[in-house]
Image (cartoon, rainbow, N blue to C red; front, side, top):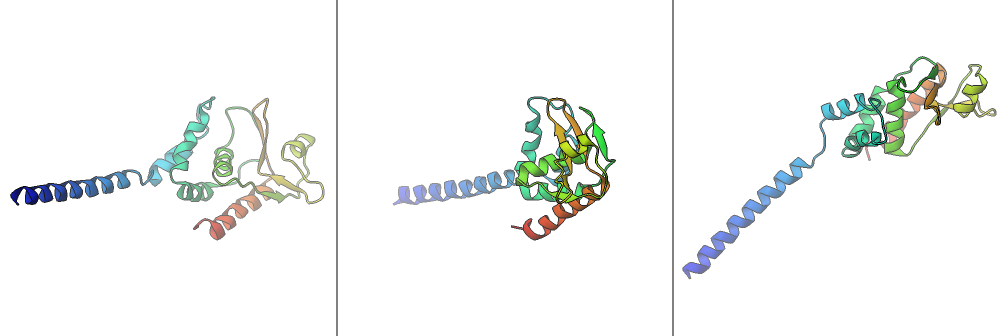
Length: 167
């Protein structure tokens, strides 16, 4: 009988330790903090290379919060063409949002576009809608849309998150 009690005590101790370890493991897997997400976002465009997408990985560990932080960081920038290595942070943030959500928004512009802007911003002549930015892939050159389109697209991201971001 003493052996049964000692075995039972041993099993209870093992079960208690297992439950504690599971809680520790679950806590460790909660995902990155806001500070870690913000730091990763700030580094999105730094020293990009063939392994550049590794920088997105931290965002995938907490995708809803990362999306919220990315959207709150969106701000319009100067319209125009940006060469490789000089893409505005907002371009990298929208790239990350596209990657996380699979979404991309367009908005109309009242601005006159150059031929290159119309081409790379995928201008729709019927609606005057453009993308926030477009890339000449072989040159890694980016064209950023006029301010009115940027502002409207940022508004669409915010409206989408307000409606769908809590699910």
